Image (tube, rainbow, N blue to C red; front, side, top):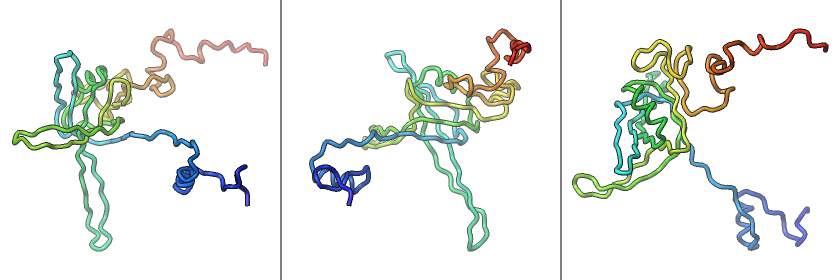
Length: 197
């Protein structure tokens, strides 16, 4: 049996390995955890903007996601809708949401879960879990073929509709976005055809 130099079985990053690490007192550490949420759904209400005394703002709205399936016993089509509270603390994404999103718009949201405590109007302590787009993390993509206000060009210069805010890589942008600021020509126009190989 293969073992470690001290004669014990090697620790693995499994539940058994962690138990072994605890029993042997070794200094093994696990990788960090992940808190990431991806949603594609429709806005349940227009975005609401609240401003803080510091000047910062939060844009909040709800997004509905719907699962549908066919009941095997009856053949009937069934649906279940989940509602998600969204809070945007990212200034740029908040401006986009405030300006372009309307009730019913289809969006892609990438954020993280955060639970907050508050006191309701009756004085009871409550908890709510939101999908939060923080100042430096999160993504908002408008998925409608047209802008929520009926603009034909879409957002961010993408004529195919929809818009992506928060994507920085030129490879992730549409073709029309990549060529902006590149001298107006296609990359293939600038290549010399007389290359000797």
